Amino acid sequence: MSNTSLAYIYGLLAVLLWSTVATAFKIALGYFTPLQLVFVAVITSIFALGIIVIAQGKFGLIAKQFIKRPLFYLFTGLLNPFLYYYVLFEAYDLLPAQQALSLNYTWAILLPILAVPLLGHKLTKIDVLAAIIAYSGVYVIASGGNLTSFNFDSPTGIAFVLSSTVIWCFYWVINTKDDGDVIVSLLLSFLIGLPFVTAAMMLHQPIEAISWSALVAGMYVGLFEMGLTFVLWLMALKTTDKTSNITTLVFLTPVLSVGLISVILKEHITVSTYIGLCFILSGLMLQKILPKLLPKLNRFSKVKYAS
Image 1 (cartoon, rainbow, N blue to C red):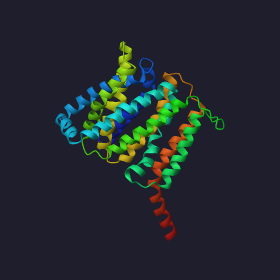
Image 2 (image 1 turned 135 degrees about the horizontal axis):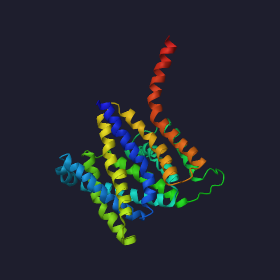
Image 3 (image 1 turned 45 degrees about the vertical axis):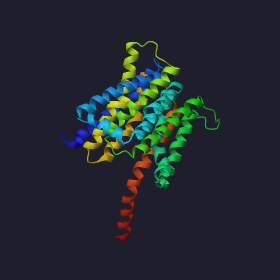
Image 4 (image 1 turned 120 degrees about the vertical axis):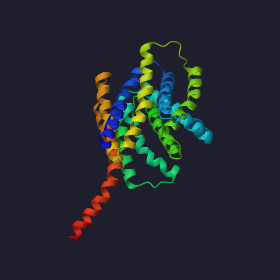
């Protein structure tokens, strides 16, 4: 099997698994409070990532990377898993899965905007246009399609999900400064974040009893949102010789997710969700594809003009 075929297999597996997690979140939140779900999922992810690190012969890197930058990993652990997943699960607890899923995808639009003050990047016209288009979709979804009412079904839920995108972007901006092994770094963040998750859960929402079905639901979230799927995605990116071809697979995730939400959760997918999601995905595609097309179009126009 060629590297390209293997990369697509890894990438499609990651996309398929990520497409299930919005549905899994809602199912798991039927058993747990948001903090309880974070606790179970983080422990599961730590075990999964730990096994992978040991299998790769990188166990010794855990202590080395932590000793080198303890405050760095303390900060990343606070952001992810603690703050990010707590805020995200609160959003899913308050909103229909279709809304929380769609709004959460705006993090990719927000990232280049936050990179301007945090990393000194330049904001392009394409980034601005993509943000306007995507956040127009956010308003369509949040308002339920009633664009002139300015009334939202759950302002708190919308605030939570949009806050989660900010936290996620901060986490990834900070990780641009990390020169360690990415899987080891993720494991360290989860190991350091676990005490904060545990303390918050015990203070506010301790687990009193847990059924097997609840445990399976929580473990599924830990394995296929936080742990194994991330590793599959990294393997896809490392195996391919054309990263752009693999990254475009991500656009399949929200489409497949909405289908699963409809079939499994029996949510009626509203017209406003379809329209808003189209706006968000259009903004993402514009941001990703247009910068690559413009140089080609410029070269084509120069050749045509010269002839």
